[in-house]
Length: 109
Image (cartoon, rainbow, N blue to C red; front, side, top):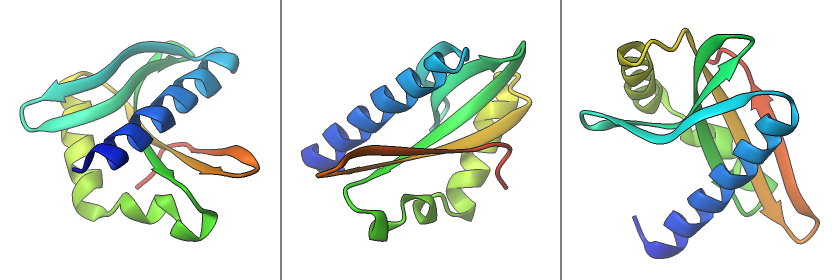
């Protein structure tokens, strides 16, 4: 992954974590590695462990949710199961001149 994309992903994860925390969600860990798989954010929602995948884009028309394909979903679900997460959520972050727009999609897949 090129450096610019890595920085964009880190910014998106930071925004997603802050977004969740403002809603009372506890961020338990970040960038959790399980073998070759990774969970962007491991959180606690109402006492339930949830794996959160974060997808970030610079423009709405880039449709960051489309980057959460079937293969990525399988990998996140496998990692989630290994750490006791009961569901997988997706957060999309779009960064453009007007700021950041965040969407939280619960229990995807």
